[in-house]
Length: 282
Ligand code: NDP
Image 1 (cartoon, rainbow, N blue to C red):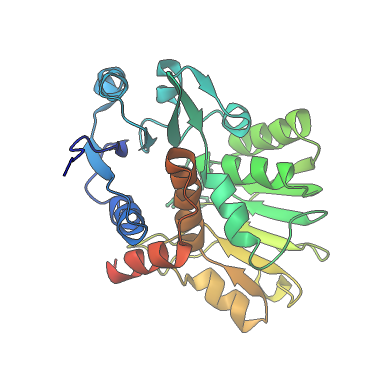
Image 2 (image 1 turned 135 degrees about the horizontal axis):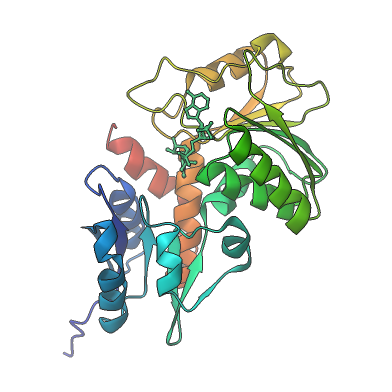
């Protein structure tokens, strides 16, 4: 019997890397679908990123994820970028295509895929809380998915205005910026409300974005990018007002599903991946 002991390699480069649960989710998918692939969670310091990418290239890795602090810095080490990664200006998934390493951004795509279980962003008016990396990815993908109006609400006016300008200049959607001062009331007519800030992330689980909960109406969909805990204070408040919700675990799982598709061609089962994360009891 012949064997092939050369296993396809994928992984993640980040610092810190130890608390990143992605490896558990991806390996659960490999096991479930009978793929003898490996996903290596690797700690890579900022100054070593170039060496790490050259190493992955030399060793024929099929692809890898990049997280903090590499999402922007990795671009100069790659051969090209996907459409939305170019607009977002950040990469979280690198894919080997032939001899080339191409940077993609699956954060926003994963968000839109998770959201699509609840609503179609086409024609929607969106309130987006936040203007950091996750918010940029979400805004660009919502715009490319047909959202017509995006109101960026952010504490720092520079980042908020820059994101609104990006959407107006580079996508078919219209965007405006609102400075986040005090409690923000969601305008009536809004279809989708997204928390893309880091407010509410473990261990700060009692924190919640300062919005007027009475301005949430039952015809709105409320989505949170925070995956830990999956049921944030914001989502609880939204559910209490009859809103449909989409959680950050769905975003995390679906960005992984899309990454796996890029690397392996496989349509991975999101339920298996979500369960693998829930089993970690983060
Ligand atoms: P950034 O640091 O780039 O951005 C953070 C954002 O949160 C900024 O808009 C910042 O506003 C805002 N913010 C933070 N604290 C406060 C506060 N106290 N009051 C008002 N605004 C605040 O982070 P990322 O965009 O990379 O990540 C944001 C979150 O998204 C993280 O919690 C991360 O876990 C989550 N995420 C989830 C993913 C998933 O798959 N579920 C994928 C990627 C990210 P300002 O500009 O004023 O500083």
